[in-house]
Length: 392
Image (tube, rainbow, N blue to C red; front, side):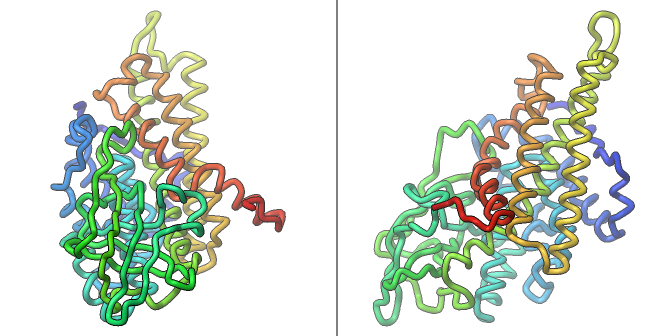
């Protein structure tokens, strides 16, 4: 593995818009990624294994529930700080960012936003330190972009609920201690349930043979007559809007995270182009390579400004679902295009594990699909600007 010489591009002096706290939080995450992630991540990606030894470090840099109040174990940071942490982690690897995103936005957030005080006290502090790891069960084998059609269900059995069904493509599931699971009650209304590892009938088989997110643990959630205590129901919100509210937070983090992957690909390509000599000069001195690099930094800069403004709106409680969808879609598309162009700058070297680009490219093929596909986010924007829902 080559030494991590990454230098973050900031073409429009975005740092001047950040507070000192923002920069401290970001720089701590950046240094941790350089020290603990990039030296090992290629090996773990090749092995298709999640490096569980980094969980403690993720907790230390505040990656688990950074915006959760301090009283529940979180860091009490704002939404821009959350975004910056996700950016730096995904600069290291999308799979590692997925682990942090799931823990923060899809496990801690619903417990904080929809849970009882007892649930918050029981789970959030341990999730914040990484003592507990969580996962989020919404997607099913037959229901991806249409989660309202879910078949997973629970029945009221007097002193407990009986949960049956299955979820698929679940990050963190193979090692998660708890799962926030979305299921329909007997009236067909969607509710969230906290399912704990060890409950009889609950299993989490791992998904193998992935070409993408290889350093992330992905699996299933299987519920075979699982007895869930009634106090594990999230009472604060129900209906499809409850899990979709969590996805808004996760998609926001992805909008920032994808910038990190793009920045890493750009920095790698720029550094290589300056060093690679062909026809008696660095390839950075040729027009075609300058075109590639100039377009990369332009798109990264636009994405940075989009994410920063979205963060301001999130801090003010004014960011809409449609705005978040636009940012997620735009920034992931930007990142995957940059990864492909950066790979071409490196030529054949771009496909090797000596450089990070091919790993980012493969990872982004998943990021462009999960938390709402590229096309679904297009339709969310379309419905918002036209007033017509094209989903049905």
